[in-house]
Length: 173
Image 1 (cartoon, rainbow, N blue to C red):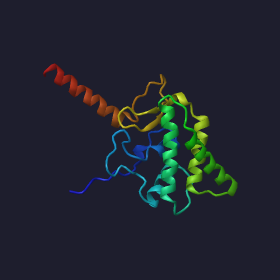
Image 2: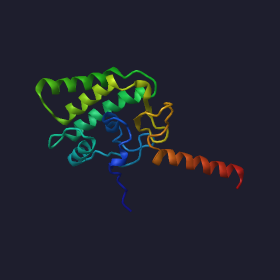
Image 3: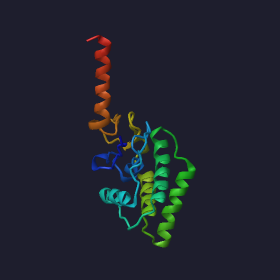
Image 4: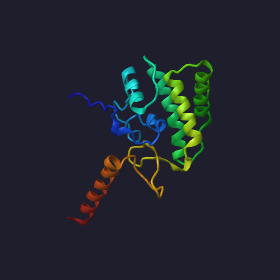
């Protein structure tokens, strides 16, 4: 029996900002599984960029895009946990974004880095969250600022269903 490979789909855009959605292109970070990489090929990167509205040049370097993604993850995961963004990933993103601006290169890694740096300085850090179930990052835009899941239709529903099952078992019904 072959393994099921998760593909990126529009329903995965739950971050509230393309930089957070980029960080979420590893499926289920909280509980890693085989084949959890959603950006496997240049066509995966181009499809994601198109869906996210990010300008993309042909033939992206997947390894470079993934490196940017991991730097973005490190920065925003730290914020989601109430910490400060680590210096090394912030510096790497700023360097890559700056190099893209200096050379006029519109390469995908430079564009994504610039997007992430802008997000770092414009998104409210106290509203960056990590899903309690899967670990994906999101911008909490709820009125009370108490959102707990990346998506109510996936992780929120699964969590509530699990809580209900546990309550039924505990009551002996």
